[in-house]
Image (cartoon, rainbow, N blue to C red; front, side, top):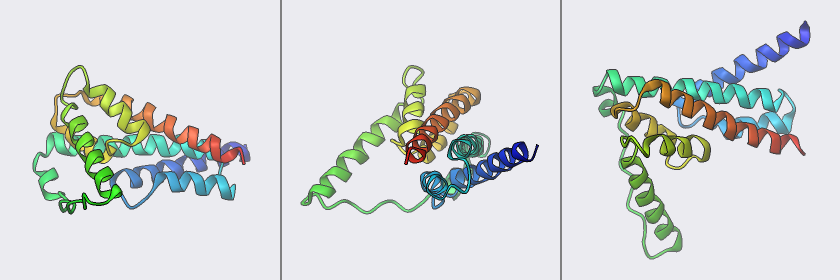
Length: 168
């Protein structure tokens, strides 16, 4: 029974971190999974599932905040990023990736491409899931479709990371 309680505690702790990292961008879920795997403080797969569930819950909160409180996004708008230096390779890469992300973000409201964009964002992190959650909340996407897509994508992402870390 003690082992089962430990597993539940690990899951709840990871869900809490996942919720926090979903709404506070400074908390890095990937670093949490790697840290757990390297330190062996928690089971990395249990932590990955918990963080994925927590992130899904947190992103749904952002989605609903925009959907039912349209002024929320305007109050929480961040500063515009500074223009990249196009004379450097890094600056050109940043410019191209920013333009690609904007094109994908424009597709979120589309009935055909909205779910694949959310799935790509949830699993690969591009475009950023924080922005996707806000834009999806303002679109016609159904909350259940968004929640399931984010949950599957995040749990898959973190489980693969955890399995990779636990292999060492």
